[in-house]
Length: 426
Image (tube, rainbow, N blue to C red; front, side, top):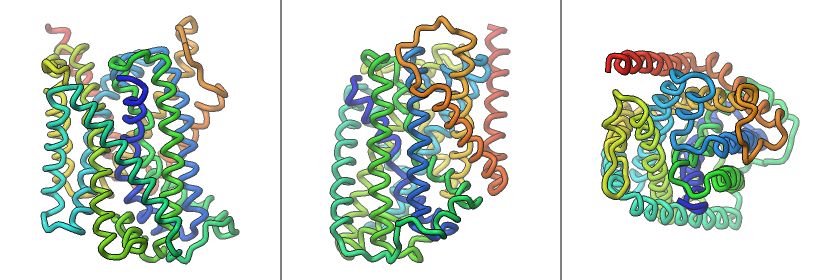
C-alpha cells in the first residue's frame, strides 16, 4: 500500500457515522451554532495532536497492529493484549456496527427493508470484497473513498448555495461563549471525538505500507486535516439548512439537511448518497481492523489460527471474527449506547498510547525516530489532558457506558492472563 491508500484509509475511517448523526445528539443540550461549530473545531485540534503524536510512534515502530503493538512494546505485553482486544471489539467492530446501523436508518427513507436487515447485509457484502484478496479490497476501498469525498464536496457546495433555513447564527456571542464552559459541552466532545476517531487508522496496516517511516506520518496528518475541513463545512451546512429545533435528538441529520436543500425527491437521493458514503466507512473498518487480530495471531500461540491468510494475502479468519462481533453489536440496536461506550473506551486507549511517547523517550532514548512530534512535549500533552477531561465527564454523565468500557478493559486483562497460562503450558 502506498501514500494514496494510506490517506484513503484515514479519511474513510474518520468520515462515517459520527458526522452524519451526532449533531442532533449535541443539539439536545447546546443551543448556539457558535458553540456547536467550536465543538467540531476543538475535535479537529484533538485529532491533529493525536495524529502528530502517532506519527512518531508509527515511524519508530513500523509494524501492523496499532495500539496492540505500541502498548505491548512501551508498557507491558499484557497491556498490548488489552489494547488488541479493545481494538477488535470496540475500535473496529463497534464502529462497523454503528456505520451499518446508520446506513440502515438512512436507507429507510427510500426503501421498505428493515434497517437492521440492511445493516447486517451491508456488513457481509462489504466484507466479501476484502475477505480473499488484498488487491481487490484495496481497489474497492480507494474507489469508495474517492466517491465519498466527491459526494461530500458536491453536498457542501449545494448547501452553501441554498437559501438559509436554519435560522441560527454561527457568529460568536455571549451565550455561545457561556455554553463552551458548560458540562454539556465537555460531554458532547465524546460524540465529536468519536466522529474524528480513525485519524490513527493507517497504523494498523503499517506492515503492508511502502516506506512506512515517511508514508505513515504524512498520511495521518494530511488525512486528519482534510477531514477537519470537511467536518466544519458539513456541520456549517447542517446548521444553515436545518432549524435547531428539528436537529435536536435526530440521527438522520444529513437527510434532514438534504430535504431542505433539494426538496423531498432530492432528499431521498441524498439519503442514498449518504448510504454510499457509509459503505466506504465500513470498508475501512474491514480493511484495517483484522490486521490487529492477524498480528496478535502471529505473536500469541492461543490465537495462531487468526494469523492465517488467503492466497491473495487477506486475513480471512480475522475478518470473519471481527464481522461476527459487528453483527452482534447491530443486533443490540442501541445506537447512542454503543456510541458512548465506544467513545469512552477508544479515548482511554488513545490517551495511554500518546502518553507512551513520554515513556518511550525515557526508556529507549537511542531508538531511531525518523519523525519526531512537532512541539514536543506540548503537542502530546494537549491530547492527553483534553482526553482525560472528556473521560472524567463521561464517567459523571454516562456511568453505565464508562463502566462498560472499564469492564471491557478488565476482560482484556483476563484474556491476556489466560493467554499467558496457555502459552506457558505449550
